[in-house]
Length: 383
Image (cartoon, rainbow, N blue to C red; front, side):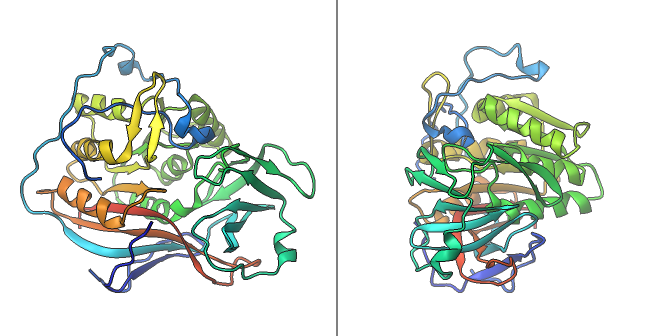
């Protein structure tokens, strides 16, 4: 799925504390025909790619919107493309209550707080490094469909476990959760982006507004809010929004300025554009495929160009970043990299793209092992 480039890789590390350092040295979806967007459901809440989603818009200015959204076509961008930094590898060895213990033979062994968890991992092509008896001591094993959003069930070899358990990451408390779609309520490969965002908010010297699209259970939103940002969190799943609110209370951030929006992401950002609302940081983590509440279809390669185009319009004049992550797609990171550069023509700044990887850390969480690639990303920053 990933295209290994001839140029030397740069590396940035997000170590145990999850802090991303600058790369050691610099190295080096298309199909856009201005088609009208067909909205989608939530990305990964309850495995949502194939499940219709109910939508609602709790903010007051959403309630009076017209039932049919006007079509928005791509803006023809001119000017120079931003500078580039590719390929960039953002690496994490874990943070807080999470680390990757071992991987191999199509599986990964992870530590989430007190629990040792085994889940499918197609990219782990190599043999397992740790002996079988270590893996056999897992507290939870996901069985069933090995696809990213495939359904299955959890097996608990040692003792029956509850659906949720407390976790902490980057200073934020939240609930881990055994879902039928193999996810556990958090995507730790995002530690690198969340650490970068946290540092941006804490060092900006001014209040920042963060937009988190396809926000799932809200960990990123809580990290941003805890750092001092005003956050707008968007997800099309009512259940995911409910989980996010639970996590907000668990993190003692009930009074934090977070706006929880249960709505289709594309519909929401089109309204935000018409309202003239702007954000300093935008995180977007779309699925490759999804269905909305009325059978609407989201196809990443078809609709991503328009989504990014609108996100550009939502960036504040002194914005600090636009982050795109792409999972489980048959493409090189160069696909989203070149799309991001075209989208940001005339905006200046820098587009850096590559892969997010998690480094194995052993049973003790401190013994570096192999790097497991998790996703593609592209990130625009002003300099």
